[in-house]
Amino acid sequence: MTDHTHRALILDFGGVISRTLFETHDLTEAALGLPRGTLTWRGPFDADSDPLWQDMQADRLTERDYWLARTREVGRLVGENWDRMETFVQRARGADVEAVIRPEAVAAIHTAKAAGCRLAILSNELDLFYGADFRHRLALLGLFDVVVDATHTHILKPDPRAYQQCLDALGLPASACVFVDDQLRNVLGARRVGLPTVHFDVQAPGAGFALALQGLGMVSDPA
Image 1 (tube, rainbow, N blue to C red):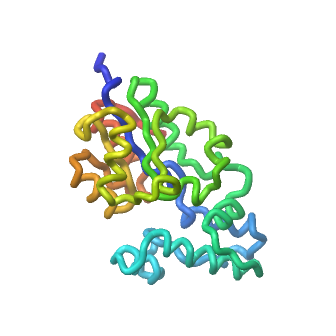
Image 2 (cartoon, rainbow, N blue to C red):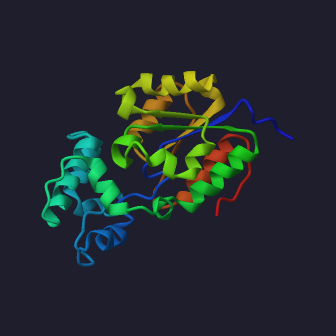
Image 3 (cartoon, rainbow, N blue to C red):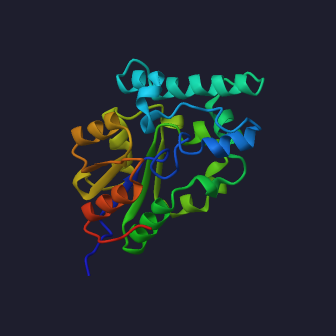
């Protein structure tokens, strides 16, 4: 049996482990008491109808700028002034954090863990988006050996130092890991430091996780 104890699966959180806010407009509208169909911005699911998303992809604004703009927009819809992304995410997704986690992610994480593979999260905004207590409310995060969050380190992907911090915490070389992210700029940043990567397609999550596990020498069929 292959020894995976010196390998690691490194995952982005938002979009990879969790479903995107684009995919959960119905849940957001219900949670906020908005009429169904109020939220029309769709990001990668319909880029042509989301000019702000196009600007982000063209590096005319950062991912944080994009979500801050959406936060303020949705806040106005409910008659409030929101200036923290954490407010939007927590109000939109409520207390049921499990509802927005991808089942494909859960399956792949358990497969990797069962094989002895180390697990890491490398996020630009885990606590910023979800709040400091989120890690204690989502049991899945207890399976991870390392969590590197730019909310606290202030070093955002694709800065090479962000990836190196994660590798140092794991105690592994880049070649022993597979990094998964839905943002191309972050994938390219990882490749520049020698990390094998999967550019995660949020519209085909099962395929993305299958590729990641294959890259670690595992065969799996995430449900």
